[in-house]
Length: 191
Ligand code: GRF
Image: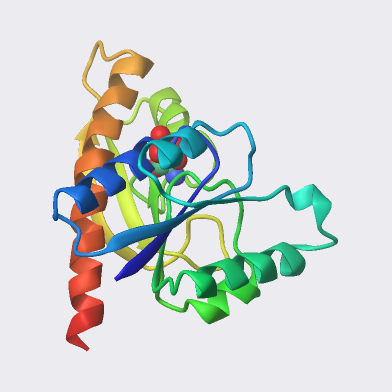
């Protein structure tokens, strides 16, 4: 299964996906990193693993349709079959959504539908929830709204700092995402 990862920032989830592929825990290959920020650390991670990068600046295109069209050409070039969003900070438009229906996954650091959008960890921390967690879902046109594939709870314990809570969430993300990606690949293959 040929994968493309889309990221805008640090790329720690991208890193664990590449590692899972290298260890044979994901039965696929990361063919391409798509990135909308020239300064993103994810780009360095890709270079360290010899993964090609398509980096673009949305401001250089008249519309989302135009840059997504170019992304689509890149995905075709690498015969990408499954798209993994990993901290990609943009909503997808119909160009990508229609071409990759049920083939785009996202990970979000809360138990959706609670705390969608930016800084979900901070939102949950400020709300003093007892439990938040991590969600992996299919992507649709909304903000963190697509069908949920898997969720895992993370407790916010008394005395947890924001940083400690964030660390626990990230640890769960890094376990959950590769495992769910592998399950989705198996599901796609079985139909
Ligand atoms: C993660 O918390 C992910 O759930 C969210 O964006 C963050 C990306 O972190 N969608 P990283 O760039 O993978 O470190």
